[in-house]
Length: 303
Image (cartoon, rainbow, N blue to C red; front, side, top):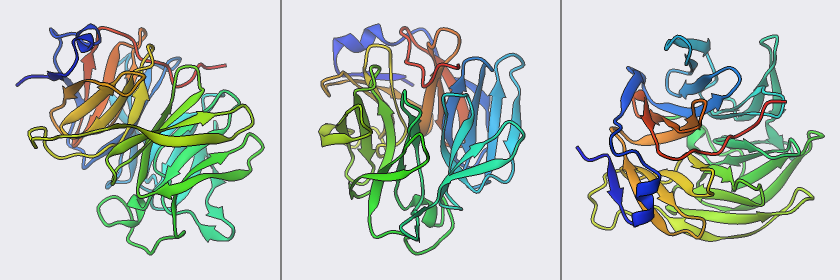
């Protein structure tokens, strides 16, 4: 099977056409949340329905259980100190794994009401945490069936002092998000609307704009199922977004360069390896990797 669909000749510079997918672990229910730790040289990812967090260790090639149960954790990332941040579907909260193994709750309520279902998460250079909050953790397949906690689906920010702030509440299903390499842009996708929006981030914790940046389309239906989901940027500022049939890659202006066609729907992924040229992919019931020609961008640099 072909591994790529090329839409623009520039896509060829990003991929290694001689490389193929390598399965690192399998037999999960639904994998998500891949995040690479450069110092630890491991990828942490989740299996949402089984409520576990797993870790694949580069040094040994082994996959171990990190947290069980995990409150059906979905998206994850690291803060500036290298602590794991988690979006817990079943508990409708953002939490942090401390060095002693305890869990600290960072956000779970807004004006007395529960958050809906924190989904994906990023951290800016100030240490502020940005996350999306759709309803997926309140649905049967990816959470615990419950009524919404809030009447809107939003983008949120936890300030360095711990204060929770509402950034935008005009989404249907906000999902994946990522910063541009210079942290001046924040990309946020909306799974139900099948598009990616872009916000301009200021130095005071605010964000403006929110115009549509790109759409993850499948005009002829040949790519298969999928909506915008996990999202990252590479070193050149190209936006990589899970979508129909695989990972859709857009240049910084929103022009589609091509699609990495994955074995199963890729809910999330991350760049990793010592040179950031390995794409680690949560593809359905599997966890796989693929070598690229160009480097991704690190989600954080350990202090």
